[in-house]
Amino acid sequence: MRALSSIVLLLAIAGHVRAEGAKEAQALFEAMQAKLAAAKTLQVHFTATKVSAKGNQRPERRGVMRLGATQVLVVAWDPEEAKKGSGFRDWSLMELDAVDYRAAFTRLSISTRREYTFPKEGPKLTSTAFALGPAVEEGDRKLQVVEFTTPTSMGDVRIKLWIDTATKLPVRRELKDQDGNAHTEAYSSIELDPDLGPDAFAEDALKEPPWSRDE
Image (tube, rainbow, N blue to C red; front, side, top):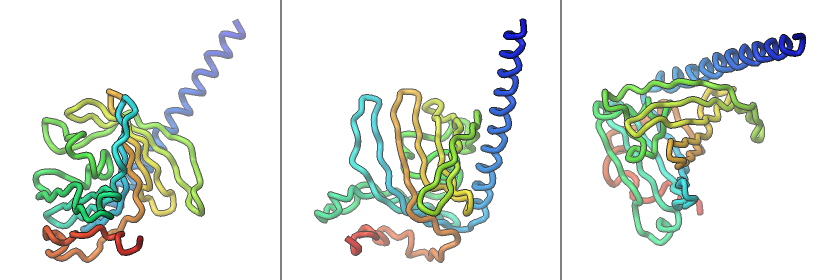
């Protein structure tokens, strides 16, 4: 009887710890979301990789996302093809009334618009099943892993997000869908309220990868 009581007590304590962790994870996520929502414009440099459930990996892409008052531009290159002068790998310019990339950046992805789409009932995204992952250090940065599930028109996507606890900005994200396909994004820089004029969204604004001159 005592052993059973001890097990029940341990289970109750574990459940309480998970519940508190979920609250902490959601609070940190919402702090990140509020900081990104306060910025009128955003510019993000990212790398993205995708591994299918069968283990096939697509070449890493490097890209830029620019979000303005009414438009969002996402351009990504295959680095090896870009070195050969092959130009763009992918280009997308959209009006913000068609898709809310600010929501995508917090809850889903900025580079997988075709694979993971918004719910059929509208562009509003929700997330559930928050969980607090491990705290990790990368260099002088302290990161906290937050996990949650976002439902899309292609099914639920489980997301793991690394958030810088000092800046409250995302550093890396892993998405896994119900079929076992995995997608990873890493954000090398996130600029809040950069000066993005109309030319920043012109088709020739990013003819060359912004990093090509550095390599």
